[in-house]
Length: 331
Ligand code: PHE
Image (tube, protein in one colour):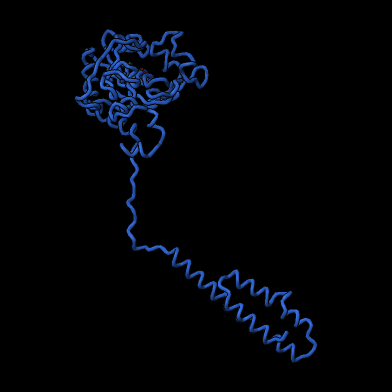
C-alpha cells in the first residue's frame, strides 16, 4: 500500500472521529504496532520509501494529536456549560432549627416557677436506692423497688424512676424556706404505648415553709394548669397514695381527644392523669433532719410528655421521639 493512500485514509478517519474514545481507536488502527503503516515501515528496503512513509507517519501523528486536543476541549466546554453554577440566582430560604417541644415546655414550666420566686435545681439521672426509694419512705417490698418496674444499674443504683430524689438532695443541703423545681429525664421499665415511654420527663416541685397547707398546693397546681392549658380544659384533683406525701392527690385534665366522653387515649375514663402531688410526709422531713412540728410543705411531680400531648392534642407520645420533621416542625 502506498504512503499517500494510507495517509489520506488516516486523516479522513481522524477528522471523522467525534469523541476522545473514537480518536484513540483511530490512533491504534493507523499508528499502532499492527497498523499497515508500521507494517510497511518494518518491511521498507529503500531510503526514499522509508522517508516518505516516515513523513506520512509524522503528519498523521500531528493530525491525530490535534484532533484529540480539539475533542478534549470541546468535551470540556460542553461540561462547563451543562455543569455551570449561576451564582446570581437567588438561593432557597435557610430553615432554622428550633428547640425540641419537650425542651420548650421544660423552659416554659421553669419560667412559670421562676416568676413565682422558685429556684431551678438539677438532679441526677443515676441515683442510689437511698435517694430514689429509702429517703422517700418507700417501704421494703414496694413494687417500684422491683427490677420488673425499675432499671437497675447495680444492686444499689438505679436510673431514677421519678424526679422526687431531688427533693431529698435539696433539703439535705438547704434549710427552709425551700421553693424549688427540678426538671429532667426519668426512667421506668414500661412498655411503650400511646401514653407510656420507658424514658420520659418530669417536673418536680417542692415548697417547704412554716404554715404551708393543701390549699397552697391546689392553688399552685391550678395556677400551673391555667398557664399551661388555658381555661378550656377542666381539671380535677383526686385522692391518691404516694409513700412520700400525706395526704396525696393526683391532678387530672379532661381528655384532649374525646373531651371527656371516653376513648382509647384516656382508657375510656374521659380524664388524663397529669401527675401526682401531696403534702410532704413527716418521714421524709425526718430523713433530711427538718422539724415536722415547725415546717410543712407540698410536692408535685408531673410528666412533661403528657403536658405536651394535652397542649398540642396529639394522641401518641411516641411521636415526640420519632424525629419525623413533619411532626417536629409543627411546634
Ligand atoms: N414522684 C411521683 C411519680 O412519679 C409524683 C409525685 C411527686 C407525687 C411529688 C407526689 C409528690 O408518680
